[in-house]
Length: 365
Ligand code: FNR
Image 1: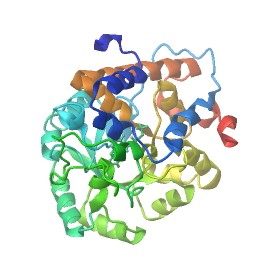
Image 2 (image 1 turned 180 degrees about the vertical axis):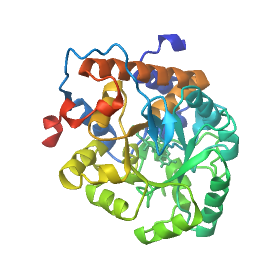
Image 3 (image 1 turned 135 degrees about the horizontal axis):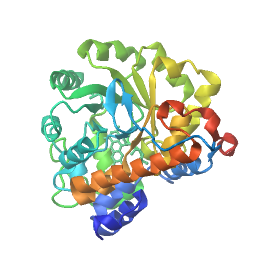
Image 4 (image 1 turned 30 degrees about the vertical axis):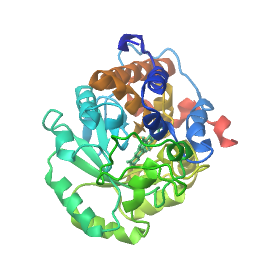
């Protein structure tokens, strides 16, 4: 269907489900075991209600914000996702063109299908990107990578993913055989659907170091001058430890439900932080991802203290239409967010606050 007929994130998803290869669909849409967390990610937003305020002159709304000092037109970033080439030949490069035209930030995966330099040079110069790192069992490789990244002008922060010390058991990805032409960024090993579990996620995750600990944070700091974030914080207690280690930003995330099934929707952690360690909100920037599909979801997360939100699968599905699809997705979300802001009675994002939402529906979930 033509792009103009697509009016929400679900339309992109539906087209992708019907047009992409079986393996691509299995890899992108799958999540760990029973898919409980993947599906509850979105369902938990649906149980939060607004407390809309009226009569506030909402003629003009401003959606601009910053992440770690980088300006963006919307509180929205592209969550790092492996292998964007599976849905479009230009993969992460087309994604980069689309998001930079729309003024938002892309966090490029360590498992991207193109070299980082190629991806960031597809965008106008000086456009900021973030990089997502999996620490390699061979620490020397990570050191070299971090040094190379620091030397590249376009990368403004490194986010270390900490929620995948083991590969999640993604059964759809395990069951569907890889397309013959498929190679992973780690040197062409083909995923096989054998009984050992040769899913693509599992194959690509083999280099990730499960021995990483909090004690390694100073080592990471010693390699790069860039801000360091942690992606995949899943408890308030760990958010507090991150703060104590001087981490610059955290992404509350359960990897789109792809790592540990029945790990909590990230919005629960945001709520828990208000009750336990509210000081983290001023010490670090807090981002959130998982299940965000509507402008209303974005606004709810911001009301509850997130500085920005990430979307994973929706960007991959929009990429089916190349960079135009990506731009179209951002325009849809911009429009939905502006509409929601007007309806709750705010004109800029600094006015978002917890009093604008009723969370009773998730407090007892
Ligand atoms: C991911 N995600 C991910 N995260 C990460 O830190 N490194 C990675 O390489 C990947 N790869 C990846 C591939 C695919 C196909 C998906 C769907 C996801 C997780 C991603 O960054 C993000 O946390 C979730 O996708 C957010 O959930 P939604 O928006 O997909 O519901």
